[in-house]
Image (tube, rainbow, N blue to C red; front, side, top):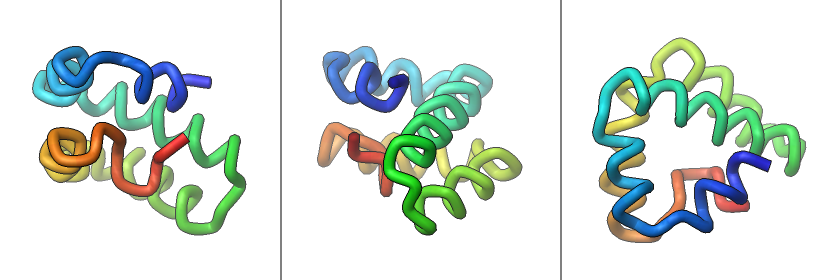
Length: 77
């Protein structure tokens, strides 16, 4: 789903999607809920709920994480 699509993108596209604040939040929500629905893990569901309300804070953490590991925290598809 969207998490798989995001992880297949080049690192530049991933960073751009996470760098722009409103786009960052929408990307976070789409990737997180996609990963949560796919894995059905308690951790991914809790993180998806948190990102829905506090997405901008998670976005900056994920920006650094994505630079290092090419996927979001707890959202590796």
